[in-house]
Image 1 (tube, rainbow, N blue to C red):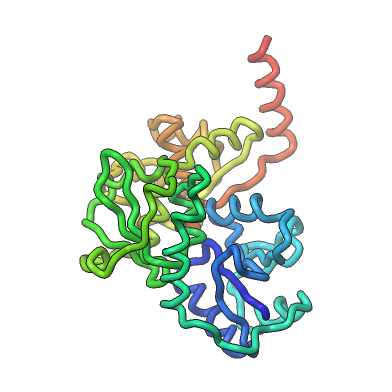
Image 2: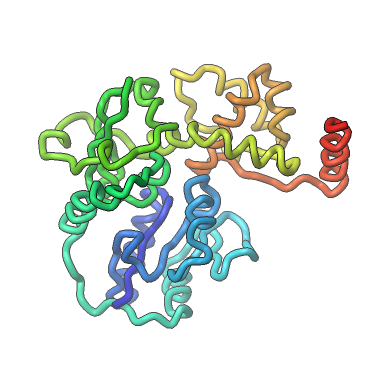
Length: 298
């Protein structure tokens, strides 16, 4: 039975691919742990981290990116057509599912109910990881923040309009006691796009961006003007600088008059939502940065 999971794929793009599956003779959507094939958005922070975590695992991976990638076994370039996805699946040589299986709501409830048991051994999950892998409605809780209800199957979350009250979730390690299946009462309320929550979760990945910037002189740019959150006014200046062309983290901070931590958080959030792209520095620039780091150690 062939099963497939979409990791970090935007809602509209995922819908297109799921429609393509209908013509692929019975492929069934499943949770990541149960999938034969995982389709990953390589341009998002969550997708990049998923690929690093799964690249040596038993499941087949299909990467999706804005440009061709030679570091992934099978890579599709956006926009991904139904034929391209079907051909990629056929090339894997896996038998497609012949039965439809449980409906998406039943699968969501099963995954949600299993979530606390899966973490009972003391493991924890980040919000970014949870948003990329969960399929069922969940109720999350951390100290100093209101409860957070997510419904990945509907690509939505339930809560107030303001994001800042939920900021502690961006850096929290969510254990079994922090993740429970959502009840029908939890799912009553104002629904908002899960993209905003992915952006918020990305803010918590600033340390990874800073580590990457320290390891190599990577430059960052905006793919397009982002929908900035009014609760984070400093991001407007950072976005203005990044729209002018690719720059290193340090140069963006200097030109925007912002702290490097704020810039790293903005970049991480943009990677999580696909609005920021990374570019490798030129060879000469890389050598210069290496010499600078060596001199600084003397």
